[in-house]
Length: 161
Image 1 (cartoon, rainbow, N blue to C red):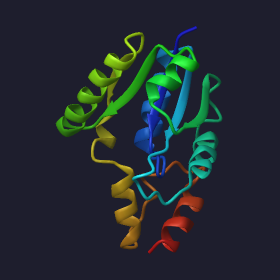
Image 2 (cartoon, helix red, strand yellow; image 1 turned 180 degrees about the vertical axis):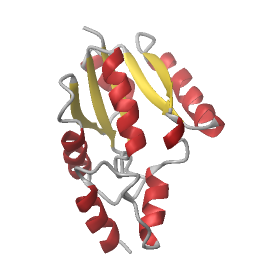
Image 3 (cartoon, rainbow, N blue to C red; image 1 turned 45 degrees about the vertical axis):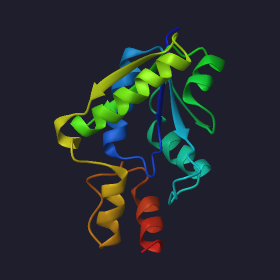
């Protein structure tokens, strides 16, 4: 069974994230969407909340699981027999950072390959940070957030204003 990890902060999960997850689920037997917990970031949603939101938007995918990780992604991959890390790329700036991380990950665990999926054109501009900024100024985030979680995300982002 070919297992891939799809790690990220997902604070919150967006339509762009969902696009990459859906496409990865068509390429691999099993995809684990992994909420990577970075203690240096100040997320709006807790890791447990992010896991629950992602579970809701991926419930129709039979081969997708959701988990969280506070360790190195490559160590998680080793423990869960994952052979690939799937990363979405929006722009050249994403590539520079992700390419560096892929090389570091390969050095730490050469049995895991990084697979880059370019984002669909309709989501090239989209990021969780952009969603939070739009919400901060009272803008409509409905085009950016999966409908199953829109009300919850709007409610939380309005509280953080």
